[in-house]
Length: 121
Image 1 (cartoon, rainbow, N blue to C red):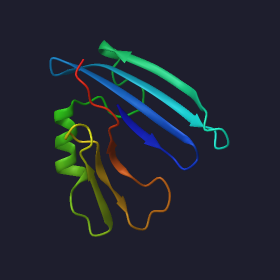
Image 2 (cartoon, rainbow, N blue to C red):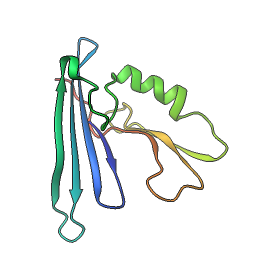
Image 3 (tube, rainbow, N blue to C red):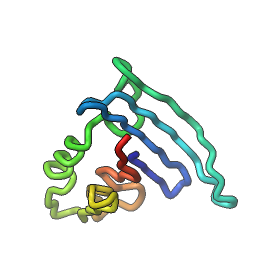
Image 4 (cartoon, one colour):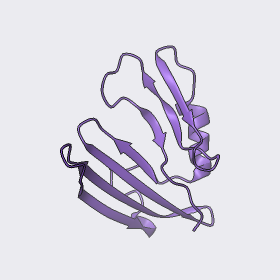
C-alpha cells in the first residue's frame, strides 16, 4: 500500500495487487483527517481490475515491486544539487520510502513513493 499525506489533512492510499508478476488490481482511497477529532472520512474510493487498471488518473501507478525498485534507483534517488534525498526500508527490510524534496519547496514537495505495507497474499 502506497500512501500520501498533506498538511491540509487530506491523504491517499493506493493498494496494488500483483499476481504471478502482473498487476491484477489497483484500489484507491482519498481521505480527510479532521484536525480537531483525528477522525478519518473517506471522500473517494474506487477499484480497478483487468483492462480497467490505469483508467483513473489519481493514485500511484500500477507497477510491480521490481518496477518500484527500478524507479527508486533510476529516478527518485538520483543525486540532485537542489534536493534532499530520502530512503527507508521499514517493510521487513524492503523499501518503505524512496524519493526527494527540492530544497526551495515549502509544502507537499516529496516526489517518490511511500509504501506503508508490503505483504504476501
